[in-house]
Length: 347
Image 1 (tube, rainbow, N blue to C red):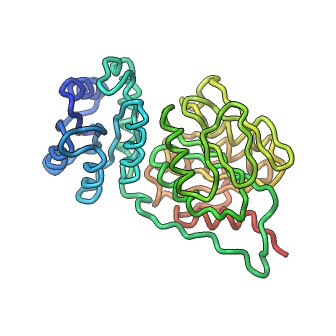
Image 2 (tube, one colour):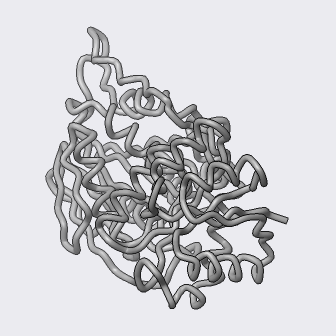
């Protein structure tokens, strides 16, 4: 049985979360009202997973996450309100080592959480299975500049990135080291709640040389630009002409129980993009992305996957690899170089 530590400054929320987890088969072995108490509790009860509030007195969730990851790495699920402030703080906590996030419906102290019991239990179980140290604090190998025999990149390439649990830091590291001269059009699908994806896009934009924004219905991008799929919306490539992509957003049925789905974006890109196409699937639970990788391969595109050793959760890459359509399986620090190599043009 999974053993959890529940950390929240609200007694009400600690009780609600604990009851939901216990009813869902998770053993709550301790609770704490702030980050400082959480540090002591982690040592005492050694949980499999921690649910961590963001805003707490004395020591907040960001500081507590950083300390726990430094002293006793443990999978952490951030449980945050759907606010801009909490979204920023949650992404910062994930940068410090938290694995994933669960949004409290209805605000900071949620009376609606019981209506999302199954999702919370599933998120806790998913995070509990993650390796909290995989791929953390990895320095990416920057792509080598073109040399005399590979003097330029192919024209109008498109890069597709799909990720879930443990993915935000990996996606950011890839974008931060992606060479501007490659001039990719970038489409990113990260399983993440609505209200978080806009802040995630802002972080990617600040970290990279590419102009990254959250997708809107009808968004168009050219070289050096990228879109992050909006939370709770599928992102489909609806048009491609003269090196420019257009996407449409919709709230059609969830695929693999998620929206946005990696498969939706990858398959639509494979159908419409006629120039070089590169896909990479990263850490995450489930099988989303496998059919998309197959479609990209069938369309003549390059396909890459993150390896098990550097994946917090190996589900998504593993399912893609099992299709037989992945060209190369690499540690996270070698992915950017491989992405760039896939569109180098020999002369």
